[in-house]
Image 1 (cartoon, helix red, strand yellow):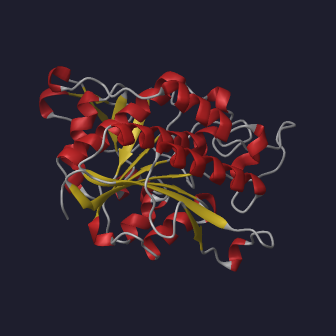
Image 2 (spheres, rainbow, N blue to C red):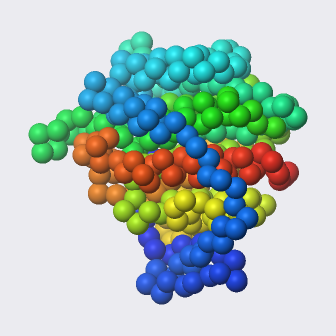
Image 3 (cartoon, rainbow, N blue to C red):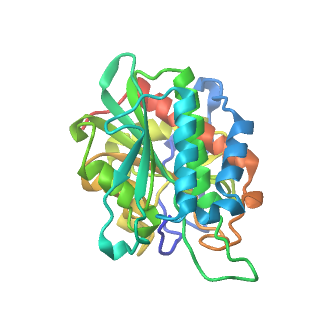
Amino acid sequence: MNRITIGASLLVFASAACAQTSGDRGVVAVAPNRASCAPLTQVDSAGLLSDVFRLAADSMMGRYMGSPEGAKARDFIAARFDALGLGTIAPGRIHPITVPASARLPDGARAWNIVGLIRGTQSPEQYVVITAHFDHVRGATVAGDSIYNGADDNASGTAALMAMAKYFRQNPPRHSVVLAAVDGEERGMWGSRHFVDTPTVPLEKILVNVNMDMIGRNVKNELYAAGPGKWPLLRPSVAAAVVCAPLTLLLGHDTPAAGPGNDWTTQSDQGSFHRKNIPFVYFGVEDHPDYHKPSDHPERLMPGFYVNAVRTIIDYVKRFDANPVMR
């Protein structure tokens, strides 16, 4: 993720009947009433963790845009989408993206999106687009470590994308779901920009973008859902997910009230969709000490939190799919 700073002025949804205020940060948290909640979504947790370790392995060298290791990650994701039997959208499974000369890719290097499609059973011409960027950064050697593994940023979101592909392939949605692993987020959101600037599905048919960027660890057991501050029509569906989440799901980081640099709207790939007037929900955690450092190793992910984050995001997509809101 391409963040600036994180502050404490946050807006969190709560039902007035079950709200409790925390004075130190001005945050209102929800005391869940789970009586109406369906059983929690089950995901292939072993496969999820295996994939995130593979994407964040030293051999992937951070999956930098335009690098041979970025191409390795691209091919791994594409092979997984193929094995799951996901449909394709022209020009196929792998979409070359346009990157300006200012990005300074090595001679002959390219950048790519990997795109899969699950056709909806009832409204196949309307789309939920789920995104996660698979590239990461390069940097200087720190404490003898020169590999920026990018486990949380954003192997966590990419592995979750593949887990969601498997889930919705086995549990077909009502609306079509597009799953896009996008390149170049760390260099300027080039993959998501390409997706919306040269669309292969009509933009007016995209109901919502669900973006995942850093969902693998948080010592407070907190995951944020940003977006309803910009798109209030999404607040009811996110609020329902808050109540039933197996972790603390908070709303915030999506209005100027969060303070300078703390509105995440344009700080990851959801910004490309918002620019095109497409509603978004971005799921992510606040920064941790290993953000954009070589120490963002897969061993530092929190498996229990990570699995519950993926379950929460799938639950949100299911809720939206069952009762979508229209612009």
